[in-house]
Image 1 (tube, rainbow, N blue to C red):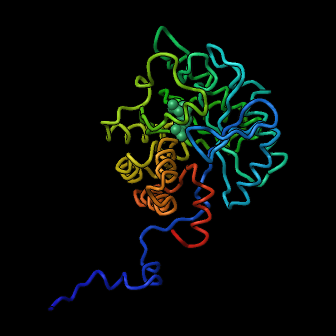
Image 2 (cartoon, rainbow, N blue to C red; image 1 turned 90 degrees about the horizontal axis):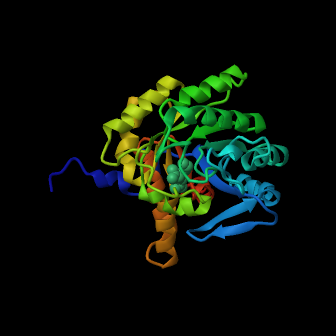
Image 3 (spheres, rainbow, N blue to C red; image 1 turned 135 degrees about the horizontal axis):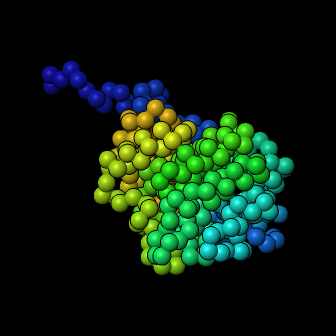
Length: 327
Ligand code: PBG
């Protein structure tokens, strides 16, 4: 056979395959999402997300320690308050659930990096991501509430804030209030290209944040659109976003690629609750090899152009990366 080019040559041994890998990953790029609830002694498994838990404040520091032990350096916090109202006022309360989670975290596990999700949907009685005008979310009247929430998170100890509401202009509003209050160094990670997705289903059960009427399609993006994702990313960079996020991840690898080529800031991808639940459920049924699929899915997200990965499998992935199974 007269063949000079034989691609298989570089696949001959593990050493060689690892040498020529195109995608390199590091556990330092992982962020682990966690859910905090009111109450005492609570460490309840979330039914739609086996292996993920609701933690009350007293059990949170131990959970943070487990994250550190697993080799993950950063968490993203979601709060589920007891009190909900029309405007979501417990989102910016000084003694709100996230604010208290941050003080506990900073006090007992200061080595962890704390990012908070900034949104109204867990805090509003109607479950939408802002205040209502009729049956729709009022963009401009929601901005000051998001800004106020972001500021209260930072004042309670958040190292970074991540607005996920998809209102126009919210990155600028948050940057402005943080700067005016002297928090010049606190980065904003914007959920920039966030699609209206069926993959958020398990999260909404976990966060008790499903809208009580309608859907989120007037603010989250239509999944038929790619250019629009790039537009949102570019706008948020202009408004001062330090990191741009694409969400969900697996059905949006093309968006991750396009956004990562269009912006000059790090790109994060959020592998959301539905992605986790699908892998977990199939694994529990014995239909797939969980570790193999988790590694392959995560690698595809980095290969598409993500620099940072937010995933419920962060602890497992940190181990796989550390042991050189991927990365
Ligand atoms: C809040 C928010 C959601 C998620 C992150 N922040 C839910 C939504 O937009 O409905 C989804 C995360 C996941 O599914 O893992 N707006």
